[in-house]
Length: 290
Image (cartoon, rainbow, N blue to C red; front, side, top):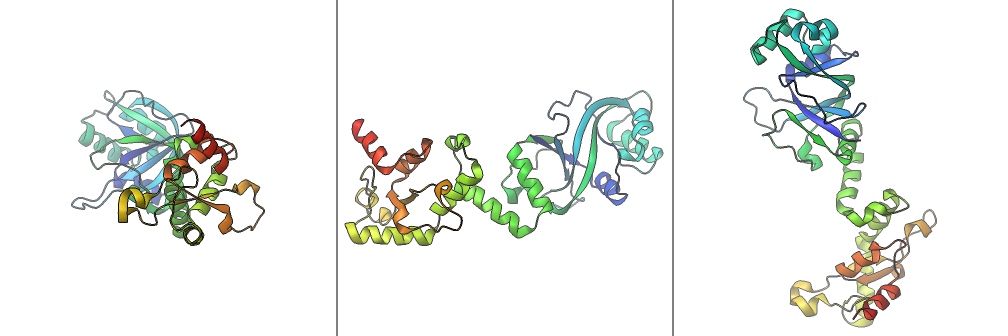
């Protein structure tokens, strides 16, 4: 399910929020071309303009559900949606349309994005904090992905600490295109990769390996970062959790012996096939192809 972020008037949004409007609303615009960005039932977010003279980032303050797109005269729009147009009375709405779009009441037409289920967020959402790109130069709006829809809603309606935790997991784990086909679901993969980011266990594994072998090198291909890059590569290596989370019992902790020492290239190759290759299988594959 994709979404759309529309830039809207602060007065329009605040009026609907203050009267707790619950019927169909009209997100009007001068453009009467078809609005094909959303399908019925997909979310429409409201990025509210700042007050004049305020230069800070604009915030997303609420959302609604897309129903349909219509083209109406100003009079038709008022007669059908009344205060759902974002104005307290017909005179105010007509005046606004004349001022903004140079319309007449009956002859001119406006584009009407019809929405339902209007909601005000528990907190303002700054897109930059969620790593969602939305430049100030965007004056009408733009479509967003399903993932961006999800994190906006989580941030808007959840506690700050829980959102920060979830977002940090997503961005620190760093899913790749190969992870999209993970058969047991992203939550399982996220937990597995999070264990591989457990610095306490990784550092202990590195220390034990170095004590046994004298230096750190990839257990698959033998690559040694320090030998290649000098001091810059000293003690640099990644840890691979050899036991999938799906095979672990509830509460089972990661053990040092479960961590293999690998370079970044071999680590990605280990994760690329489902089920994952073992260290021995990838080593054999590497040797067979050299």
